[in-house]
Length: 185
Image (cartoon, rainbow, N blue to C red; front, side, top):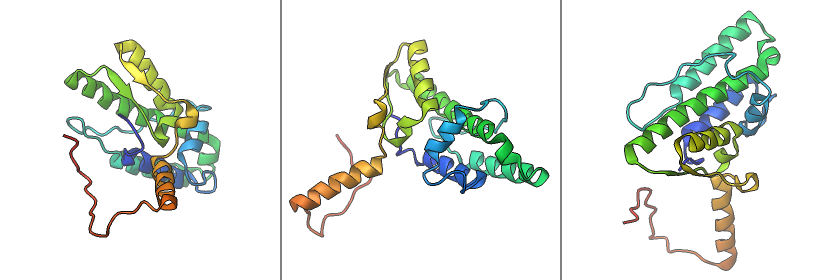
């Protein structure tokens, strides 16, 4: 399951938005980066990919690489972002999707699963949707990609549930503590 709970992906889109130009990309940046990415060349610029063992991944090195890339190129050409916005977005998105799909292929190989789903706000990203669908066809996976109108942010979904529980007066005692790693077994 790939979802917006993959906070590094969300943070990478937001940090990229800030690094490119806050005035060009209002919050949230992911949808606009995706929009511009569709107009650009995904291989125009190359960003390094982290080599993290196993199924873990991190985008911190990528975020730093994007920062230095933007700083260097805007020092040389103050109009660099404006002139290359679509290609920058396409290249960043391409790199993120390659990292995620590489880890996904590894996870499927190691676990033997044949069903893969995406959910949450990140499932609205066209690059991820297309790559997952293509990998599903290539490797005979059953993929579950929600209709675009159901690709809402998980935080919004949790918020609406909380709102309805509030309206119903459905509260718990103050003694209840959250358990982030609660087992379903």
